[in-house]
Length: 345
Image (tube, rainbow, N blue to C red; front, side, top):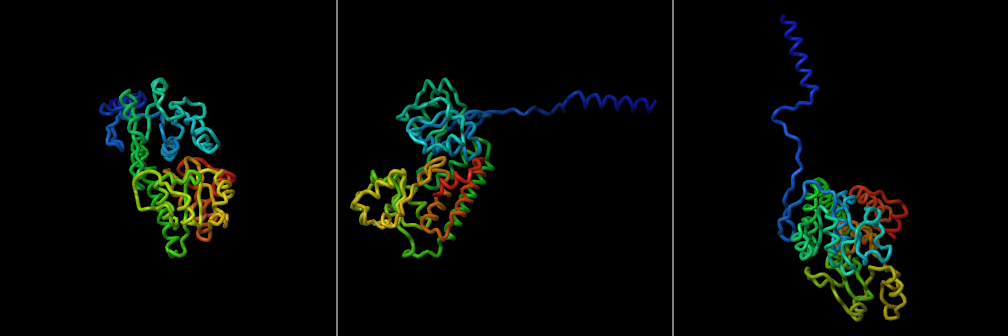
């Protein structure tokens, strides 16, 4: 009788095990919406599962934030016309190939095409324009405002993206990488005296502007002296005159467009400028975004500049390794040797 009872109990237990029954107190995983505070102090409700992300305005910068998190496949809109006039932004179509045939959500003046946005209904929008964030929010589209006015803003923005995409580990990893690269650059340039340091002019020499205040930061970290650095940490661009350029007589000129190199060389006014005489005029890379402006690629900007200013401190091979690691590790994209060469040269 005892053997029969034991056998009966064993059969019952097996039936329960294979019936798929779960303990009474267990619950299936539920993906719920959550709320974050963006960099304008706005409370934004984010879908528990994000399958599509649209970017507005400074799309190169914003796409790079998404791609940094390994989420480039979520981007769902085409880059506006001002980004597609040349092949300068071609790597965006490598990191997120689906955007090539995606809907256009802003016109050539970066004005919102609201009807198209409402038709697409992206799960999340990202912008650096408060008006756009508010307009989309008022129409029921979750939109996050990111700000990048000070150098340190990149850390808050990366942490916010990590929270939104539930990739806090990647955000932490990137910020540790950022700090380590800055420290490495500082160690490499520690023995440079003020007399050793080279003077640098960055920007659009044709328009006589330095487009982003952040350049004053990365030139300094790379051991250079920015001739446009007036100590101000607010505002976007710096304007100057040809007379000031001649007076500064920079050792190195870094430009934002390739054709500026020939224009500077052909301008007789600049014949005696040290950078022109030495042939030390370089075109800043644009990969996910223009390296000299606001971009998560800023650590690479520092080492690219070090390579141009002091090749004895950072060789081409060392720079190539850093470029390859960054995009492979964060963007999940393996650059070819040809692509790397094109970037560093």
